[in-house]
Every structure is written in C-alpha cells, then in structure tokens.
Length: 43
Image (cartoon, rainbow, N blue to C red; front, side, top):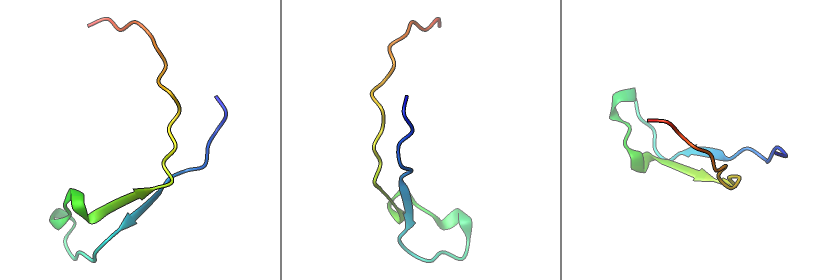
C-alpha cells in the first residue's frame, strides 16, 4: 500500500485533568483510510 497523509487530531477544549476528557472533546480531520484487506480469521 502507498502511504497516505496522516490525519489531524484536534482537542476542542482545555481540560486540567486527563480523566475529564469525553469523546466529544476531540475532532479528527483529513482521515483517508485504505480499503479493508479481506482475509480469513480463526476464532
């Protein structure tokens, strides 16, 4: 696979305690994933 540009992670608000972060406090931009690779998986 050809490498692609990395996505950006933006933290939307200032937090003093790392345990106060929520899912909504982050924004991901420029995410361009490759298509999935098919393969068998043993469970």
